Amino acid sequence: MAKGTPKGGFNKSQWIREQPRTLTPKEVVEKAAKKDIQLSVQQVYTVRYEADKKAKAASDVAKPAVAAVAPAAPAKPGPKPKLKANGTELITAQTEVPASVRQQFFKLAFQIGSIEAKRLIQLAENGFAPNQ
Image 1: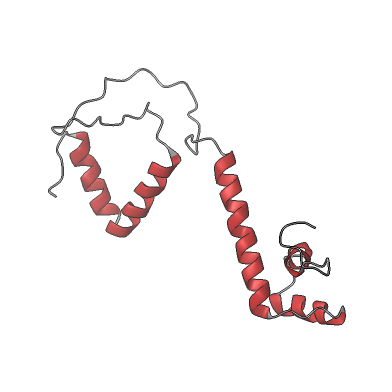
Image 2: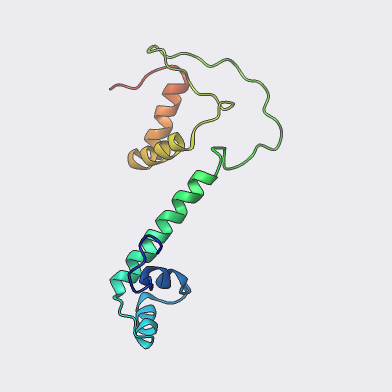
């Protein structure tokens, strides 16, 4: 028997995942009751949430870490990256940035606001490290 399959051979979670997403959780519970399957609305929400989370994780792994919009023409070679005072490399537009770093950047930019994020980017471009 497959992992997670009850002894009776019926998997409620799988049955929920097979239902159209156009059905509300309440409608899924009502449909299940007509087939003598006992479900709760919360159970439907949980199974759908976990399925979405798993699908998103799989799609994130499958996507290569590239820019969302491809440039129209090949980028011209730019200046060599500058080094900051602490020795870290300043990432230029030609350097490919990992998706996880992009996600962190967007989260931080959202938290501090676009004006402050732009100010910090200008400081970084000019070679200045922001005050700690």
